[in-house]
Image (cartoon, rainbow, N blue to C red; front, side, top):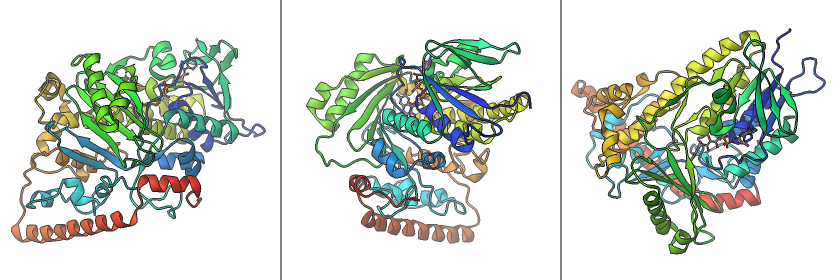
Length: 522
Ligand SMILES: Cc1cc2nc3c(=O)[nH]c(=O)nc-3n(C[C@H](O)[C@H](O)[C@H](O)COP(=O)(O)OP(=O)(O)OC[C@H]3O[C@@H](n4cnc5c(N)ncnc54)[C@H](O)[C@@H]3O)c2cc1C
């Protein structure tokens, strides 16, 4: 076959480049002597650093690491990783110390029962997430999602990770080059060369000559060297909906050796953005993401330092030097153009709220690996499908992230007031919010089986933020019966929460044991 796709070139060696390399190489064995040779090359600049942030993952990362063939013990030990079970939000509702959680576990009996109307009917109900999942009971005690006897990647309650982004890329690089046969070229791409038909024929590098390929994967970060610069695929800003465009990132030491490691990302709203706080075994990663149109860098820095002072003391705040990262929130209009597909920051980035960037990389790499076009002839069909799917994902990210801002009752700064302006709310989200005044989101609200955010996530944010739904009541006999059944589920959930609190170790205890003994290998 003349135009067989047999040589893939990835440009960029951040989390996107190496995750893509790992997932594709694991799926398509690279055997130099095979009848139909398949080659995967990754070109990485020795001069342009990776973005160096991106420390929170979704539970999907467990499946991705397994797919690549990495042991969870090695991953946890080498990436300074800890277990993440969701996000804990503070000051998002009123700015006066309010809190709620978005856990990774769906509500109890979620397949069959929508518990929202029954939870709304309770007097003195606990927070929505606390009433319907035992997971949030583990947050306060910084508890782990499993025991040392639980096998690798298995869980007692669902979890993802917090990790050191630099160490993660390094582990993936070693595994890809030493075990999966990926060729690693350290060079700067200085030119992109077009073929007669308009595809990319090759890239010219400063120290490794010209490199040809059949499919090019652009993982060059915000530069978007191939898709953006070479092909000129337009960038679609979403700043009219989501205003944040600058981050100040810092690393903070623990105040004591055995200080607890948080079970979830902490997200604390500020006057023009929010501060993330991620606990790794050896340090905390924290940062302020904000809208430069609503607050000066000096004020944003002062808010971050005040937060660091609160969590780690005066010395930590005095000695930290936050790193500034500016970005344009949005995404490319299409992601796969001709024989080039962009993954990671080169395809877009909105903001770290809900940590949806790494999962998009996993999904992109997975789809490319699963549907790798056999020939150039069929590539455009795969590209169209890919573009449709990922545009849907990006739109859902915009709507779901905006939900957090729209629901806030904060009125203490122009940022929050602008966030409530009707023009800043995507039309679909406005419609959904109208519907959800009378019924809670549930399975019928899912657009596709592979929606990025399940309807359970909408429930956690809506009812965590105090959204008011007035459900229509059915006949009173059926209603009473369902209410009794639901209350039984709430009791069952509370009992399970107590049981897990007794049974599960702290994050730090478990991570120390993993370092010493490891989980049982799969
Ligand atoms: C403040 C902030 C917080 C974030 N937090 C999270 C989070 O909690 N969870 C999450 O999922 N995501 C998060 N993200 C997103 C996440 O960091 C990225 O999606 C992820 O790191 C992937 O980055 P990347 O590999 O696309 O780009 P980069 O890390 O920027 O890598 C780009 C690569 O391209 C190479 N390159 C560039 N130019 C050339 C050239 N000319 N020739 C050869 N190579 C070249 C560079 O050397 C580098 O290797 C966050 C992002 C920001 C900005």
